[in-house]
Amino acid sequence: MKFQKIAALVGALALAGSLAACGSDDSGSDAGGDKIKIGIKFDQPGLGFKESDGSYSGFDVDMAEYIAKGLGYDEDQIQWVEAVSANRETFLKDGTVDMILATYSITDERKAEVDFAGPYYVAGQDLLVAADNTDITGPESLDGKKLCSVTGSTSAQKVKDEYSKGVQLQEFDTYSKCVGAIENGQLDAMTTDNIILAGFAQQDPGKFKIVGKPFSEENYGVGLPKGSKDRDKINDLIEKSFEDGAWEKAFNDNLGDSGYELPEPPTVDRY
Amino acid sequence: MDLISESGSAILTSFGLTLRLAVFSGIFSLLLGVVLATFRVSPVPVLRWIGAAVVYTFRNTPLTLVMFFTLFGLSYQLGFSFDKDLLYRNNFWLAVLALSVYTSTFVCEVLRAGINTVPLGQAEAARAIGLTFTQNLRLVVLPQALRSVINPLASVLIAMTKNTTVAVTIGVTTATMVNEASGQMKSLMERNSDQILLIFIIFAVGFMILTLPIGFIAGWAAKRFAVIR
Image 1: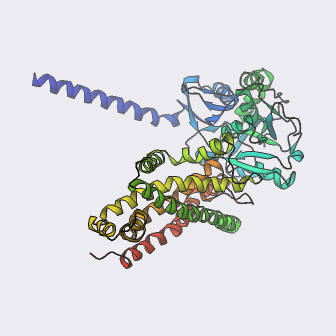
Image 2: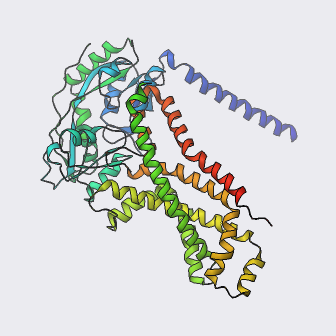
Image 3: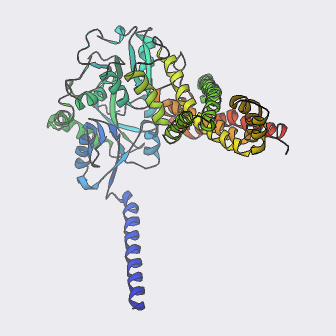
């Protein structure tokens, strides 16, 4: 009796040990190319979003899957990693992720630290207002209005500095709070890149509209570690997605009901 | 050190705002805490129930929720606001309100513990010479109770100073849109992602500069005003 108990214990330990070994094998072989780790946003509906059931959806997610497939990875070989804005460069540099598709604008400052493929999308700063709003027609029409954005973003300050001096700003830690306050009429508008706004409009079709006068240009690129050898291949894949309809499908599947029109595909910049 | 030359004044402004939040919330939470403690030891049952209800509600609710409720519940749904025209002023006072109510429940419980340290004979003697309940509390019990809980009160105030960071939930800013310290830290990290460690250190030191004196002053005051029995 006692022997059986000990045997069972030893068996259980051996099993646990083999499982642990399995786990470490997996993480060790990442560099070998078994898996690809892709950084996305987890909190932007329609772009990069972690659903409550643990699956991922959005335009960036679909584009990332398309690119990963082109590079020879199956869907189950993709490991999604949350990349918030502040740690995108760090993640690429220290190898936490292999590439990033997370509303990542190509800028000269960032180009000094990481490489970019693309752009695969050109967004622009715009305004989201309630569907029945008629007096907000652009960033200059916000005097006396209440404009919302998230802490750490410069987009609302830009509106105040350059377009409407009399605008009042409200900052929240998440965009969804802005959306709630606009829906209930406490705030008048929120501002960030139009495709991000489209993601929120898509969640409640018919309640919101995007003003449609973008006042900046953000080129979303695929962030890669400096000196990545996959860059040309990814650029080819992005161009291919424009031609074979995958790009348009990714947009329509995720943002088709937002009332926001898909613009022309951008020209890939092979710098 | 570009960070300091570029953002130094903004960091100072943000700590100024944090300090203002802490000072106002500190004053109001001490006052409200005394009122609550009075309620909880009062001979009137209704007042005791009210005091207990407030303490149990707010002491056991996360501050983030209290803060969120002041803006989304109190201001947006119920239409209460401190300043109808200026958003930033309304947000500031809503944050002070949330911090004060939340912290006052802790102040109240610390004070009640202090009241329990005052020997029963003191209150009985005060009653015997004809003092009313409020006179008894004001002249005899509370002065002794306060003096024995200076250090625990300082801990509550230090915690409150650090809790001001929760004000970022409702976006508390100055008139020129500088956030309080935690929002400012988030903004800086977003823009200087290569210097995250330095930013952490700057803000950690900033908070220590605000909170360390509270501890030192309390330590000195506890000795200076100790009740000798």
